[in-house]
Amino acid sequence: METAKDTAIIGGRVVPIEGEPIDGGTVLLRDGKIAAVEGPGFAVPAGTDVVDAAGKWVLPGFIDAHAHVGVHEEAAGWAGQDTNERTSPVTAQVRALDAINPADLGFLDAIAGGVLAVNVNPGSANPIGGQTVAIKCRGRTVDDMVLREPSGLKSALGENPKRVYGERGETPSTRLGTAAVIRGAFVDAVNYQAKLAAAAADSDSAPVERDLKLEALGLVLRREIPWRQHCHRADDIATAMRIAREFGYDLVIDHGTEGYLLADQIAAASIPVIIGPLFTSRSKVELRNRSLANPGRLAAAGIMIAITTDHPVVPIHFLIHQATLAVKEGLDPVTALRAVTIHPAQIIGCADRIGSLTAGKDADVVIWSGDPLDVMSRAERAYLDGREIYRYDYERREGVFADLLVRLGGSSGA
Image (cartoon, rainbow, N blue to C red; front, side, top):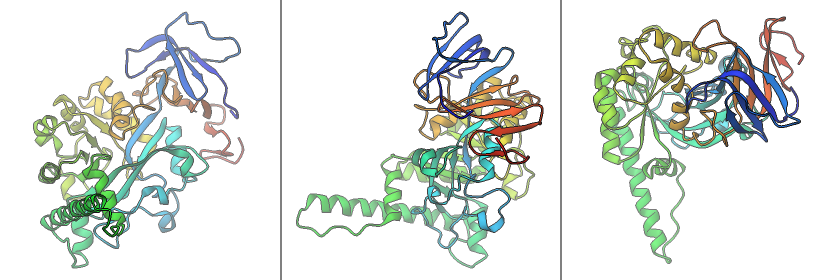
């Protein structure tokens, strides 16, 4: 499990996601990419390492499009909690990239659960919380892991900012105050863009002083990155859509607990919804309509959905189990697998590299013991960029990670 090599995974049920499943198929990995996805009878090139996957399922690595792995570390307490910069309602300038610890145990959990990529978000304490980053789940430094940076700008409506700043007696202490803070920041960003344009047109003008907050908001206004809107209640979702129409940016709804109440409007606007976490209690008022049936309701309305754990709210390796129980409550199984693969890849702007078993994409592949929607199935092997990074040891009943010299839940050694 130490060096990358040409690998052919043969004989399994290959589920490419973008395309029909292939029984007895072959996935050829070469130079860190998927070189071929073929049916029975494919001639494996000489010198290729062959992995027999007969009786198993072969899928692309799963993707969690909204989580806090790396910035809210497992078993680290306050010392590993860097999710929210709570010192100002508008912190568009902060980047999740700068707080991610690749040694967070959450990344090992992710890989063991078949999750090979994640979009790491700042938290939801602030009306504008900061820039998100799409990364793979393994690397010596976060710079080695980056897929896209920034991949979005996080914002929050509803109870969280209202509670955080209301308890201080500061603005915003209400929903209307939160919306006003967001709108005011965008107006400032529009004015900043105008100053930059005027300065560029006048060679004699003084340069405009840089403003990192307004630069980040400018990326949203120019539709270079999406606006990642935390909102649960239907009225907050309507506010998110209203502000997006006013300023003309690309909106992604995060959580969307009551999205089913506005499903026709969300679908008509072609707004994707990253729904979840689904394994939680109704811990606050805006979650009172939480239901495992909601993903199926949104998908049936024609909305592109992705499923999230919001790790560490739900452990990230339970991502596929949330999809399984959503299927139990009405979500189509094909859509369920798309909701943890190609849909999140499209939402975070990385579908050219990950999300399906397609020739030319990154060789991020997981071999499952069976249908991953069966809770008794497990990820047995994981490949990232064509290298085997994980193997489940049935004798020891634990996962072994290449190069990391750790066993999940066990002693050191590889």
